[in-house]
Length: 112
Length: 111
Image (cartoon, rainbow over all chains, first blue to last red; front, side, top):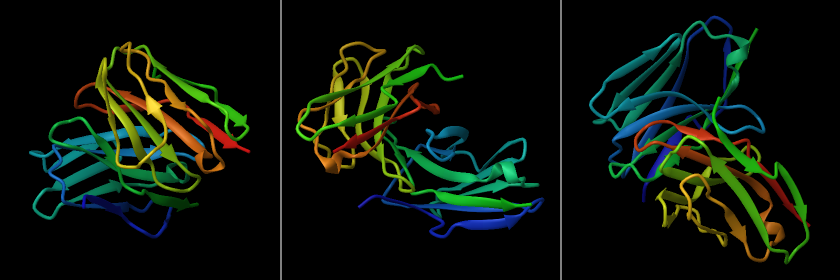
C-alpha cells in the first residue's frame, strides 16, 4: 500500500542550528512533492514545491532535496529560530495530479 | 492571503442531526479537497474534486458526502452525525499542480 513516513519523533534543536526533516515514501510515483507548515488549530501553509526532475530547491532559509531513487525528500531550515517551531508536513501529488496526500508530520521545537 | 473560507468555524451538534460544512474559494481553482484531522494527528484525505461535477473519495473512508455544482463551492454533508464524527475538517483548493490553500477549518463536536 502507499505510505508516506516522516520523522516519527518530535525534533528539538537549539536556536541557530540547522533542522533537517525527512520524508520517505513507498509505492508512489509522485510528480511533485510539497512541504507545508502547520501551527496548532490552523490549516497547513505552503512552503516549497519540488518537481520529480529537480534535485534541490531553495527559498530564503529553507532548502528541499528530492531523491526519486531513494524515494526520499529532506527539508532543511538553516539558522533556525524559535518562531520556526511548528509541525512540518510533506505532501505528494500523484502523476495524475488529482490526489494530494500528506505525511504524518514532524513536530519541530527550536529552543532559545 | 488565501481566499478560501469555511463556515462554521465551530459546531456543536446532537447525534442524528444532518449537517453541512461549507467551503468556498474565490481563486477559480479547479481542484478542491476535504481533509479530516484529529488533534495532534495526521491529515486524512476524505474527498477531492478536480472540477465541476467530479468528486472522488479519498484514502480515509468517510460517511460524509460532497458535491461540486459550482467551481467555487464544495460543501460536505453528514446525513446523521455521530460522536465518532467529532474532528476538525479542513478544506483546501489548488490549481492543477501547484500549492494547496487551506481554509481555517471547522471544528465539529457531536454530542
